[in-house]
Image (cartoon, rainbow, N blue to C red; front, top):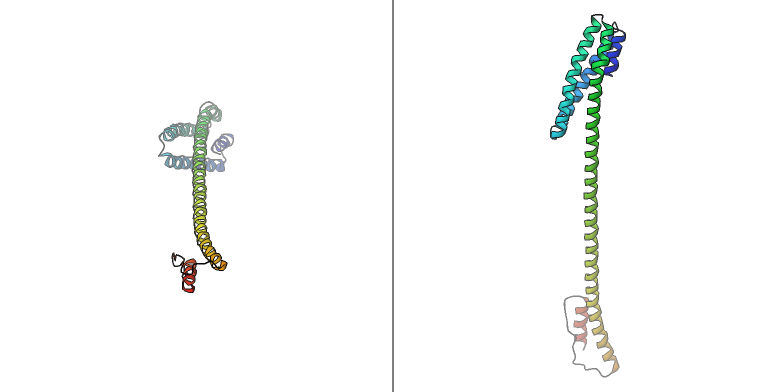
Length: 193
């Protein structure tokens, strides 16, 4: 926008809107560079690159001021010559510097995104591993409890079978282990006998 506004000033020196557009674009560019400087303070390489761009911008502003002075003095051809020989090459350097900063920043963002994805994947793997471990522990505990129940039921079943065979020792007692359903059944069986 700034370059186009400057060209409009050269093409039509009486166009007040071209001067307003140029001043607005200049303010916008300087504001963006200041904001960018604030964003890059933590990164020495980016700060140094931006300092070079700001230095080029300062040079460009000097050329732009000279070009406006030439236009206001009626030296439009000299203004065009300065625009093409000095201001435009500096603008291209600024543009390339900004594109390089953007490319570097995009690379850093991609690297950070990859690192975040890697950390998320690692957390997911850990979560899955812990879930599988918890499920395994649950299965083992379930099997132990089931085994304990089966052992007690088998004893009770064996005792009932012995009683029903008619050769039973009526003084035999079942061991009462715990205060649960199986323990209470064994205690009731002992009272019955």
